[in-house]
Amino acid sequence: MINHKRQWIPLTYSMGFLFRHLRLLGWSILLVAITVALTWIGYLEAIHLIDGLTGHFFQQPPDITGIWGWLVGKGWLVVKYLFLIITRIAAFYLAFLTAYCLTTPGYVFLSGAAEKIYLGRQVKQTDGFTPAGVLIDLWEGCKIGAIGILVTMVALAVNCIPVVGQALVFLIYVFYSALMFIDYPASNHRWTLGKKIDWVRTYRIHSFRLGIFPAFISMIPVINIFCMALLFPLFTIHTTLNFIAVQNGEQPGIKLS
Image (spheres, rainbow, N blue to C red):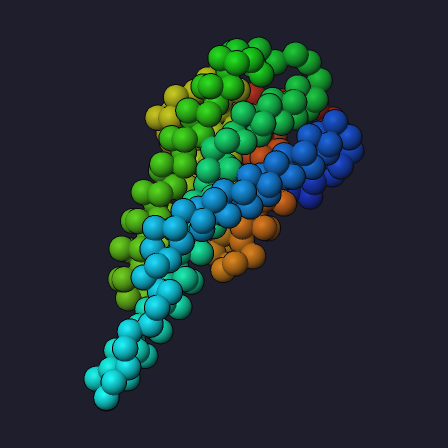
């Protein structure tokens, strides 16, 4: 029987846990570097592709003759800059989402390493960091990424609801963020996506507390990508420790607040 009243492991403890173990810290720095590099490369390639397909449309402004021509010219200029802004933002988000999917095996490995260190014993994990395990982790990461695209579409629609819409959007992102990080420790034990979603639903309070900070960061324009990339390892370890606390109730030598 799972105890629904497990104590909460604070973020400050998770941060200390990360910095006390050089192996985890080194792996985290490597993952951040890989995530940033993949995001940047993906962004440049996406922009190159978009500009190659549509750039010719904005190379030559329309003929400006008379009042109507002037209006058309101004409209063309507005559309050009809106197109540039939207495509750059979209390319950046898609690049980060791709980097997230590709680095999923690394974060699953980080989560497993944190679990082994925390429990002080070997943890039975299926496949591990093997070619088969990596492929499974990549597939699970793609599924979470696909849910992220769906969540974004739903959030855009819900955001149109006056007053309550914005609050609902924030809650959607909170619980999606929790699911995104629960994916790592749960994938170590080869949980299905349905079981991961069920965990988030069953432990709503834990999920809310795990997801609220990442969700808040993700809603800050521009800098959210960089902040999330830097804090991803910390959030991964924080979620892993609380996942263990809920599932096993094993908290060796820790004074929890």
